[in-house]
Image 1 (cartoon, rainbow, N blue to C red):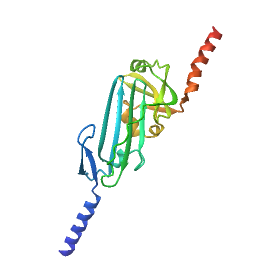
Image 2 (cartoon, one colour; image 1 turned 90 degrees about the vertical axis):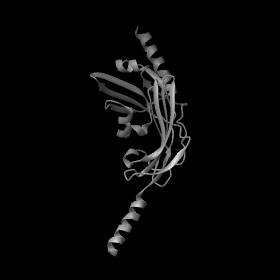
Image 3 (cartoon, rainbow, N blue to C red; image 1 turned 60 degrees about the vertical axis):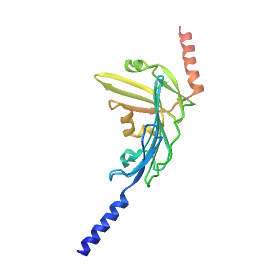
Image 4 (cartoon, one colour; image 1 turned 60 degrees about the horizontal axis):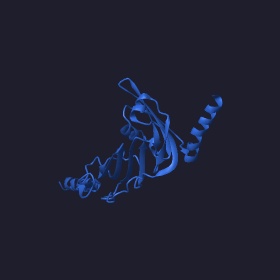
Amino acid sequence: MKLLLTVCLTWTLFYTARSLSCHVCSDRQCSNTTTVQCPDSSTMCTTVTSVISNGLSVSLEINKNCSSLTSCTTPLSTVVELSVNLGYSRYSYTQICCDTDNCNFQTLAIPSVFPNGKVCPACASANHSLAGTCNTTMKCMGAENSCFTSNSTSDSSKKVELGCMTKNLCTIQAAISSLFADNPKVTCGAPWSVRIGAVLPALALTVYKVLV
């Protein structure tokens, strides 16, 4: 009987030790937080600051919560910026995952919206993306250090998306699947500098005039 009681107490202490406490936001701007005991499946605490812009509409959301290990696709205890920029819409995040009690206390900075000197091919609008007539360029912002091309098919219609992306997203399939619909094939490449981006259109126009 004593042995059984000892085993039960040991198991209880072990179970309690495994439980993680995290800060959780009470609203979308995280003006207040509470501390909660996470379920067994959540072994990480996360903080995410996200900005989604679509034309003239911009939304900001701050989230702190418990998370599973599989949902944390970034290095542990490291603030990482993730961004996909189509020109006419942009999805950008700063995120951190950590694994100690209430380690997600900090509120992360809003992802940068300043041009970083890099240029990528882009679609002028969502309609151009659907039509596959993408022949413009765009300036990358913040941590966006890679160009990308996404090809997908939805309802028998092919869709092409071009723009700037943080290179760390190129290898995170789970993140790509959540940001892009219809299981696209995403290819990343090196961006142009602003100087090269300005020279290429001028060079193409010069060649056209010579040929004509």
